[in-house]
Image (tube, rainbow, N blue to C red):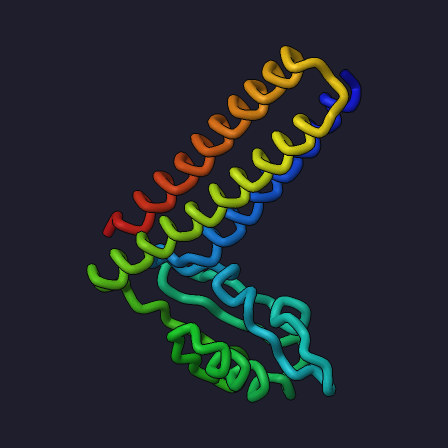
Amino acid sequence: MEEMDFIVDAAKESMDQALAHLEKEMLNLRAGKANPIMLSSVKVDYYGTMTPISQVANINTPDGRTLTVQPWEKGMLQELEKAILIANLGFNPMNNGESIIINIPPLTEERRKDLAKLAKSETENAKIGIRAARKEANDDIKKSEASEDIQKNYEIDVQELTDSYNAKADEIFRIKEKEILTV
């Protein structure tokens, strides 16, 4: 039984990772409001090393439509501006000599629909990960020395786990879709 419990726990851990990845990807989808996470993919050339922007500057949101990037060293302003443009996030950074100001343009209806499709795609990827964890667990259960009845019971447990994680993924998607489509 201990072996079977371990198999189910490993499947649960894989499914947790799939959901955690989904939540991280959903944070990267912008819903029209300014959020410092929007710049998380930006890397800056900091003395020859590509460094995440959050490690060389403070990123703030003075209001829902603006991001400000305040470098810790003034000499980094041009590098930061260049890195934001290179990241191709659709932002137009403005350098005022002290900091970089980024106005977040409101999303068009078409862009909102595209983002909702992207969110749906990320949700499907998470579900693929969840199903892969189920398949791996079921394969391991079938390879075990346990009786057929015990194997069937554990397969049912794994399926219930899969269903609950798929429902969680759908809920994450519903929340994000509502956020994206709300004007």
